[in-house]
Length: 593
Image (tube, rainbow, N blue to C red; front, side, top):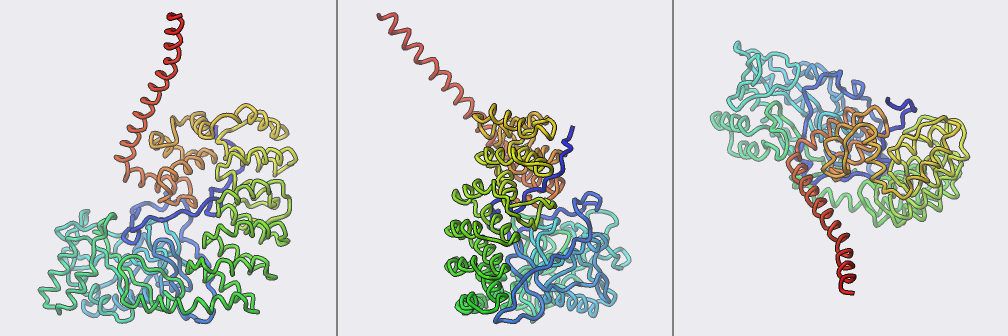
């Protein structure tokens, strides 16, 4: 039976070390389209995320695309109307709230739609995902984070030369016909006019137009037949690309813009093909750095906080000592921004400073940020510091996670350590549990269940006693044995937390028991070498993401599992031989005597 304990939140980036992205993500768009809304693990439309970005010595007007297309976000984005004179958002995508983009991208889409309609009266651009309000991850794509990507359905015609409205993006075969009924034909004329509009638009800088090779060939053949200029065709040849290691883009165009020069100076990051103006933008960033450093000492707390934020956004670790001084700033918001900036910069050399500030900090919200920072730093000293904080009962305000009114510094430290699987924290958590009452007893019981992957049933009054008894029995066992034993008790035949256990671990992600699902995710993310961040997803979303990873790597996983099994068998054989060898020598000596 599933546990009836209150749910513990899935680990967020606050609970573990931030996860690195793979190189080459700029060419990826691993879509998970064609799902019904009822299968999605969240509510539609996606909520708008408010983003902070300081307006310092370079006041900005319009949107700002921050970070990369796979890890970034969007500030001050522009919303595309669901319907317009020459465009519409497709039926499936219009419910998602993914019709936001950078000002430049939205304006370019509207311009292209008008250009196609002017050349081909009645033509309607049909648009899929762009970005969600505020940008960030969306369920259907690896990219589309920073408002510089848009999916555009192909212009398709029926047998009467009419363009029907589309419910979704439609796959087109190499012959130009859709692969499913009703049969529709890829129209080179309208689609080329679309491509041409983007290429000739002087208000944007295109980075890529992703499309499948057969359809790319049709577009270029049409341009050649139409006697377009060699310069235009050469640009089209360079921009029209079938991405490597991703879906072929045979059901839509994927438009991607470069960072504008203004956005590069605010933290936009290019990956892949670079702009000719990239050096100019880099110079603008370099010119800003001394000014930002000076603003760290501004009389205005908003400017001090903003300068710390921007230096971290630019990844300028050499300024970390200047930022660390703000841990003692008189303004609590500045202290929070400085703490978060040190985490962003991975400035682990300031762990001691964070611990020192935490011992003196009087603001509960700043305390939470400092505790969270120690968890994200993840150094030996940071984790040791968190263990020592478990007994600390000073109030702390939770920003994310458990929605309770009983949180304090020690509970936050215990939560982070439990979700990291830190077995050395157990004695401290048990000491805290012995003094706990009410909701804190329930929460600590739940944390220990997550940490150990074990359920130790009994009444709430006996919670501390039963966990102490369990730990006295199991303290000498290996941590992995606890976790594996928990899976086995739950009915999952996980024989090891390596490739041999990948398939049952994948099943366990969907388990209704929070601790089983949580530990299955942790094990799989370790196997995947953290290249798939599932910490923020529901069970269903995490399962889909890891299933994609498993299917993509199945051959390698199964091969590695066989190699591990073979090594284990060889080790067992050698152990037996080693165990028997002394006995044989002893028998020989006895006979000789």
